[in-house]
Image 1 (cartoon, rainbow, N blue to C red):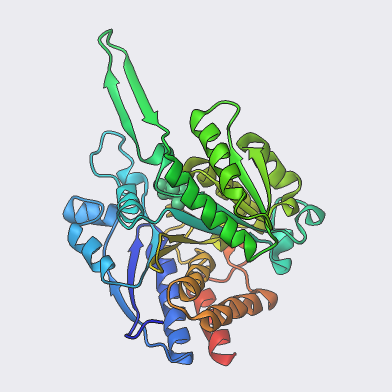
Image 2: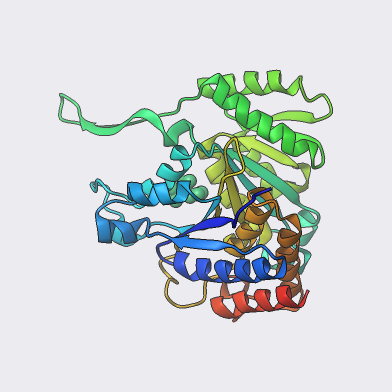
Amino acid sequence: MLCRMPKIAVLPGDGIGPEVCREAVNVLRVAGGKFDVPLEFQDAIIGGAAIDRYGVAMRDEDFAMCEKCDAILLGAVGGPKWDDPEAKARPEQALFKLRYGFKLYANLRPVKVNPALITSSPIREEVLRGTDLLVVRELTGGLYFGKPSKVWKAPNGVLRGVDTMAYSQPEIERIAVTGFELARGRRKKLTSVDKANVLSTSRLWRQTVTTVAKRYPDVEVGHMLVDNCSMQLIREPRQFDVIVTENMFGDILTDEASQLTGSMGLLPSASLGKGKFGLYEPIHGTAPDIAGKGVANPLATILSSAMMLRLSLDQPRAADAIEGAVQRVLDKGHRTVDLGGKTSTTDMGELVAKELSAS
Ligand code: IPM
Ligand code: MG
């Protein structure tokens, strides 16, 4: 239990990030008032906005500010303005600084099909019904951080590029443990996803997961190749409970899995390390095409703030209340544009806040 006022760093970022963060902070304030947990918020500029203002995606002093907090709420970073592949400073560096700097190696992305939205998905209702899975994505290793990673001109004048997928056994072991522990609290089924027929890192991954599995005899474990998994996710998503996978595979599979719920605008995430400190963000990006129009779906960020209350701030009742409020708003038929409706970002946020107050 925290014995002082919980402090939350708010990093809205770019595009629709500030719009959706505003609503989530408002909902958090309401939850704090209702459950007698006064929350303190501190903002910092990151991503493209920080590049414009400071020349870097995230300043060290802003990182230090986050370090003094109990959790981070993040919108999204990036946009066409900062897409120059030659640029030294890139918005995504802020994300990597946070993920790597705080050793947030476990990224939890729950995908639960909401009966109220089942017709919003491009996948058929009978395939979707009952889908409730959790992707545990390794977040501080693999292709995202392996060295070398560069483009260079070979002596023959040809440009070449290289990225490195690297994993150590302890890195795989700790994420596997996270996956098994979470599976224990759910339906006790874990699917480890790799590409062991091609990649050395995947063979080490499979071997390590198999070893860790011996400590969890109560959890049913299976191994699946990533290409097959991408097919199974839309063919029979109900077969999955917990999926544990490496960084890049998890990135790709969670975008795909988001479509099971009907919209990327609904998927929250939590990034955790060893302790309670965590980074909470929607899995969607900055959506530059709709930024500033007030039509973005704030629910993924609002649901991320519920995960924050549960996982970092020891406030499971407040988390349940937010999720309940979101459900009631959806049950009443309110839909943002991504779900085929007309409700604006602020209206959606306010509707959730109102339901929360009334609950
Ligand atoms: C995600 C995003 C990021 C990632 C991008 C913005 C770098 O797609 O969180 O899934 O690839 O990890
Ligand atoms: Mg992604």
